[in-house]
Length: 338
Image (cartoon, rainbow, N blue to C red; front, side, top):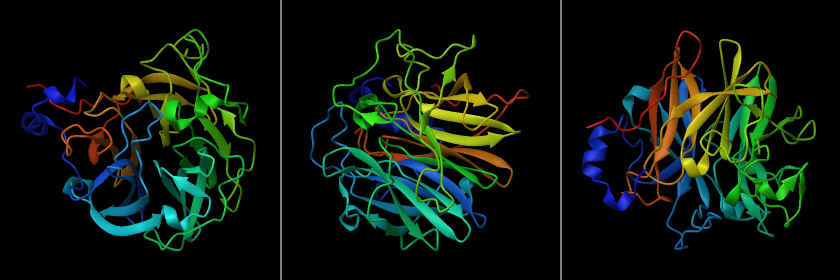
């Protein structure tokens, strides 16, 4: 949005389509799931780490995770069920516990999270619990072959896939064919854009069953989106859901601040760009999840309104989403016009 210092937050909050679900902590990147007919939300826990803003995102210095619950999204309030994981309990992790996700398989809950290792390289870790609220016990090492940020795990009738990856501070641009090279960098505008990375999960949910591969997002002509197509190309924050037997890959465009989506026939793609789900919010980042509850669909997202525009101190929100007759998602404007 426009410069936060010029925003009348009293007016903005009156025009907002939803209000913060939590006001006593800063929460972001909400990953929402329904377990036993209750919504559980696993967000990042924002703090002021005292680190200046930079393009690597070092000012996002999160160190732990909490879990929240809601009986109904219409309640517009989430209950804090406590801390479920701290960076000091993860042997391999050094700093920056960013956007997580969770999956249930059988009677166990698998909590996936990114963090930087001792070499300041992002990896994806796993902690396991017998309940959705913990205690979660972390594995001793990150998932072999994992890298970058923003894990999202999708259950396709008992087959689980992980989607992950983000450029800039998320380090995805340093990889080609799953290999890290510090000399690798962002693509030029005429090259095919980076896509999210995806892999099928092993039966025990602790490793990849196949080598991760890049997901391709195509334009209306069937050509891959280009790196210079900043308003449509992938940046970070993948999410997958299924509606009317179609697979919906949604994601953030990062520096243009949209939540966009693409639709495909297969969970590994290809996907065709379909439009925007969410227009820009206050704050630099935008991140989301989508879940169904009692036959209705909801977008969980965040903005920086609670902190009056401090981009690394965010608040999670929820609003209902709607599909048209063709299965396209109607764009959400987070703040009503005056």
